[in-house]
Length: 354
Image 1 (spheres, rainbow, N blue to C red):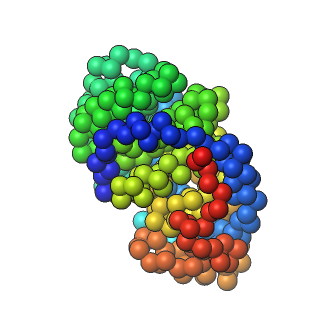
Image 2 (spheres, rainbow, N blue to C red):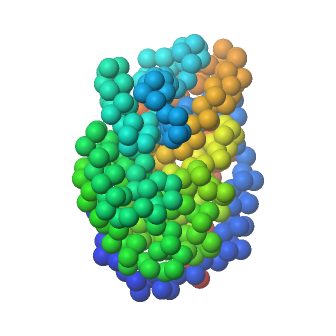
């Protein structure tokens, strides 16, 4: 994970002035979806990047220690060994970003990863996931239990009632308490944007979450009727950017829910690069809540690495790329179809905040 976000004092005056331009958001989302996506060896490199950013998750009512063990095994080897070997990537240590489970299954995940000599982070949902409607004391105890059992990342959910009724100060106080309960564990705050009604509410909730000390903001629990969408993501990313420009602290972003195909993963990576820049193209600042995505990434990887020359180029570019180091090979982060853009802070003429 990246450096912690210490949070700031709640700035209600700033929030009171926020009005999001809905048409500008929708226009920007349409533009992003219309961009050409990388192909062939560039696509393979980007898909391996996507795999390295996945929080591999099981949040089912029938979760058992054996289910969690299988999840951990898949997280350690997310892409089939034969495919990685064909790309000369079998010895590069490619894993998912983390595994994510319920608090009661954290100990099982920690045990399985320790047995495999893996240092992969264990994340846990908490605070009354997915509704966030349990008493505050209960939600805090849930965080403490997950941390005690070995979770190093906590995915909290906000009380949507507070956001919908404009009780930003109360929401801020709760988030600050969750952050304190997390201790050294990084905190991701789930906004459940499908329940928040308007882009303005989403922007304000994003900002309050970051002011309260969230290290990541996350779109959805995956249980809402509407989960991660590109317009919502743009609003949240603009809030992240505004917060960074104001405080100097980088906050991560995690879309979750409904992301199932490799092509969708490519659009999400493109969106991150376009809105926040290359610094966010890493597991420390970008996560995907899309466990079913891995099967399609494997299929796409198989289809796009048939030619020997393509395999050789993919291996050379990916193995020295920012998945593993701080180098910046144009083939991975800026394929030719995405070159020629100006710096992200000066690129956009369409202001989204009135």
